[in-house]
Length: 157
Image (cartoon, rainbow, N blue to C red):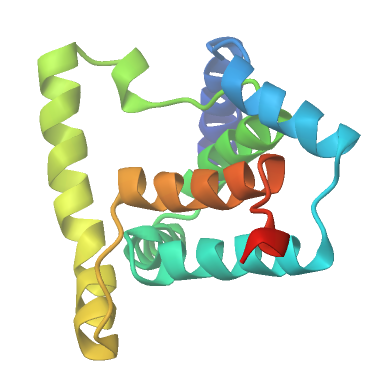
């Protein structure tokens, strides 16, 4: 058990050493929101759309996969927690693209997305909503944030 913990900590160390640079587009959004915070209604809208993106997208399946895998193989939890910490700090995340050749990693990512999107597709069908892939979800959130930057003038209506 101690040896497994040592190997896991070493894997975390290697993952944290191979981080990417911070995403300047996301940094700009964060800086803009610090200068001009969202109103309460806009914050509720962003949270609502984010929850729908998770529930009607691949987030539900991704979470179920990670929790299930962590229960079956606990050391993987350390890697995912480190990756989440890297994402929160804005330095990027450790992905399979940085380890494997491009063609192989794309195949693995497509297969993974096909598996983890099943719960989101089921819930979206049951709820009568449209499935939200990553691109659609990001577009919805960007639309809400763009409305914050360029509010519609309701006095002309």
